[in-house]
Image (cartoon, rainbow, N blue to C red):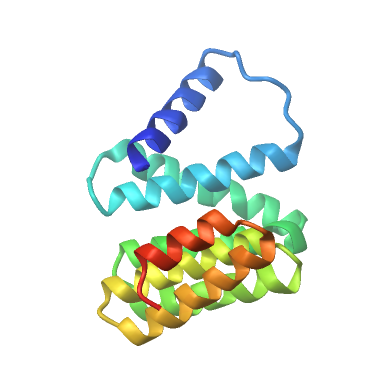
Length: 164
């Protein structure tokens, strides 16, 4: 539900502007940053609202800093945000390579949840580009990763909503 997700991103940004943010550990800040970036890139496929571009670009820029200091924890997140950027700008070859790199980096470092999301996003990318068989492959990988994670309802939702 991107409408709800966008409201949550906006409320968090307003809270930070108002100075009511709490001192969260870095890993929580990076999760919020990552999710806000993903939501913003998705919303940019539907609207050209400049605020979503600002959030997406700021998320990617800040994630570059985290990835430089902790590549095993953050590089896969940066790669996925970069893939989403390439997808948005129609840079299909770059997007495909970046999705694969994000999936591999998440897998190599044990981030099953992010691997699942990267596979799902790669499936969406390939489906929107008309590559049904490739999309099916990625949806199947996402489904398996969600099951491995124990997210049975998400795996079931994916199976029902996406062709694989």
